[in-house]
Image (cartoon, rainbow, N blue to C red; front, side):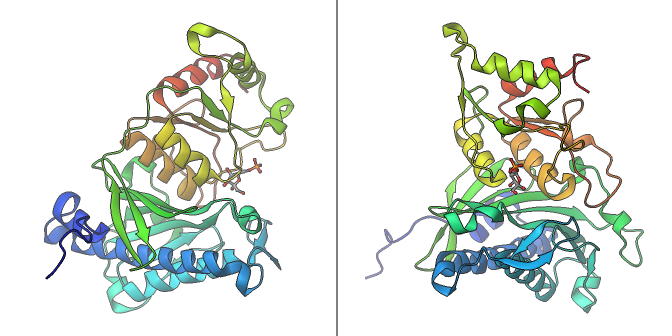
Length: 341
Ligand code: P6P
């Protein structure tokens, strides 16, 4: 007798088909999301058995186009995502943090695809060998109809043009968080059947919280206005629940996943030692901003909404203040002062 209680949850594919991406017009997008999930499952397996296969966080000896040391799993993850996207034929090309230039797919299906993908295949990879959660972050845009041969200009679209955005966090469980512009849902990987099942739907980030997330070590590098805000967070004030708690994992996906569910403010500011900040606009800030805003939060570069920034280059950086709306509004008040330069 079939035990219907075995698992009544829908898979990510079934949920999207039924709820958020029904109809023929969404077939290719659903298929593209499946290509991303496949690579996510493969990366999750590599990570979970990594230590047994020899440390995966080892430095490969090479540096990426930004001069950052490339870890073994960075390369493995990048190859897995690019291969799955190319073989799936549901996107025309990719911008990846690990590739200086755009990657164009020349097979017939990809060439006729409506979509392009921007991805950070393994964010936070410096944490791999100490078992701290790392993640994949991705953004999906429409390929401009005008473009004959894909160029990097086709990727330079404002964040508000995103069709979908998501991240996969490889932690105590592997969770795939996604928005297609109709709220935010989360899907958890069942390792026994190697399938993502819906676990949280229409996630709403708490409007306010008593937690901020910043690399305190950079305090004296920050603009004075931000130093003043951080000092405000540290002061004792019963009415506003201060001092706030500082939580900083050093892995954007982990810090933002916590903020999405518990509320909070994640800060990666410009600083004397990082004039543009550190995080990349197109495949870190934009997708995270789309997700957080779809969950009722806010995301700013300190002066304007992240999603309205007109990008100039595919790997450009941006400062980011993102999370609970009340907290983003509060830090923005400080940053509007002349001390924020
Ligand atoms: P810092 C990881 O290297 C990363 O790109 C993000 O995941 C993380 O939020 C940030 O850099 C941490 O940078 O300078 O505080 O170590």
